[in-house]
Image (tube, rainbow, N blue to C red; front, side):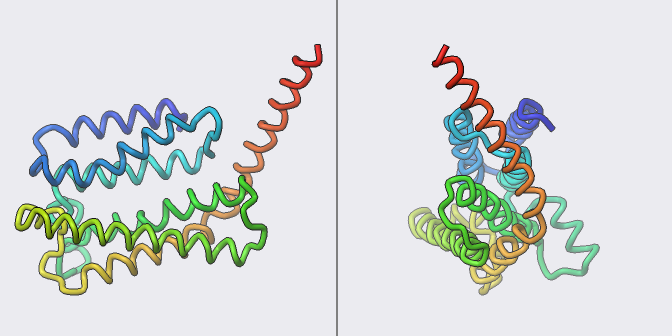
Length: 214
């Protein structure tokens, strides 16, 4: 899909999510990362355009967040279907969200590290990517903790623990799984798209130099 088509999808789901959600306090907490992400993508689009793969993944991740914000993660219909189909103990839609929390940032980190030439070694790059994703997951869990302390029972829908005492640890483990899988699964495609962007940037730079010299 083109960038314009992805933006249209984002906006359509955002509007749907905004209309009569479970509660607006939870909706704001769940959806604000997607809105901040969109603002950053728009602000950096000209000087650091992303690969089509990453634009697509960011849109998918935003949809996951907005669906969770509309219903709350513990009440998403897809999660209830998964519970019945796979005989799960609870609504596990939030596991999808936390898997994406590792999977998508892994490709973001990979793109920045490669295109900025931060680290050349594939092994060290993989380690740094996974570490960044775990740091993001830990930060989010700390944020959830402080929101819960500050707002009390009104944060129950945001936390979505569903009585699971190991929910935080399982969330981070699911994020780790996403971070480990993403570079292995999408690395080849990602490399090809990065190469195309760099080639087009070099071509644009050469054209600018030619215009200046004229």
